[in-house]
Length: 304
Image (cartoon, rainbow, N blue to C red; front, side):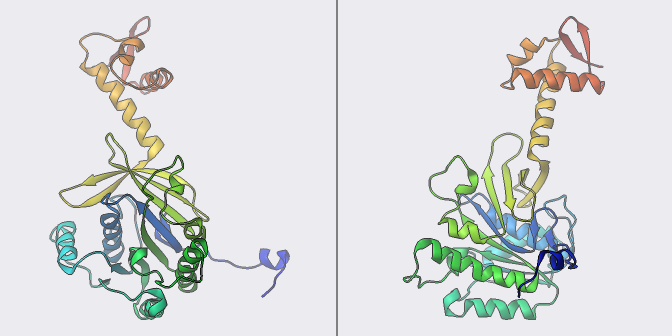
């Protein structure tokens, strides 16, 4: 159907729905990372939060709804063990559905997925873990780009048709590049067909990982994440730049507090790898908020 710009501007187009606000909008999303980084734990955490209507990643309010999780690399025993740890004694939701086996897309898997979406009430999210387990096995007539694009766009059509979020779990390439969004395994046909890309990457320090997000209908962001091994859960600490700034501020304050005498910026620089310009900026912020004081020319100390 053709339409002109005037008609487009007069259309009432609803805002996109979110499975997880600012993280997972309706449409096709791909989550990738290195093996064993915790992609499946991340996906199961979000599934439980949506099914129970509790905060996702410990911070984000979500609307309750049903979830279909194709855990194609897990066993029932492993899923049961993970659920037991994550739920912490709370009742298991009856609107979180699992499957450990699924036909490939070119062998009835796509039609089965369509039927499942239509028959599960209040469905908000479908997770396919992993794409490699369901993508078409017979792509001899396609080059790599076309095969990847064909697989992903076929699943995307379902998310668009039913107005739900679909999350494909995928892997990074063996060798990493400077641009993290180039690290998704496969051709650009795979990432080009998706609406949004999420990359889970290890980091050192107070945060255990970074979640990089880029997409068509979502603002590019990087979030700092913390992993809690006792509950097998990821917690979002906040925007990565803000978290890093707060962590550096805490580091400088702790250095001043642990010293038995006032310190100069040079003294602080000798105890940390934070850049001089950042140290000076943070010292000014700590002064402005009343956490530290100047005791002499260029010397700082915490306020008792």
